[in-house]
Image (cartoon, rainbow, N blue to C red; front, top):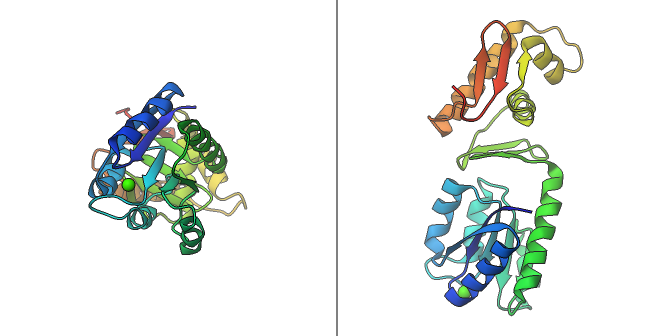
Length: 225
Ligand code: CA
């Protein structure tokens, strides 16, 4: 397994110990000590998982967790120093994916990180740098900004993004999106693509992800012209 793991922990020794264990298991750890830095960092870097301590300088972990959930489904494991707190936290429905109590063994944390990633990737959220598509919730975010797509726009983007680099004709895309053989004009796809691009550009002006292939149709390709 691999991916970026954000460690939010204000005890530097503990943070570097966790980072060391995660790195030796193939992850790319990044540590933040202050609560106020977390949300902007997550918006910019789209980590694959967050280990979030609750008691932090600057901003409370619960607050951070709730804030992140307004724009991202990134897996979050909450770390708390009090085992009796876990019941209360569960009741608050913060949207965290798991809870770990201090003191813990770094080995256990790595095992939990892997388990949460395995579980959450079942929904097959597609991740290309900066773009997160969560099919179970029809939720799309680009560089941390929610795209607010219609169901048709989401399906279109999801299908294209799941098959990067492949060119699809308008008819193929229509069959994919309207499986009930509804009669829709070729122009319908063009109009959906246009809206999709506009929404993505509003979130990230540099985003050139859906490309027109002259006379054929469209393809999804990050980094292509
Ligand atoms: Ca702490």
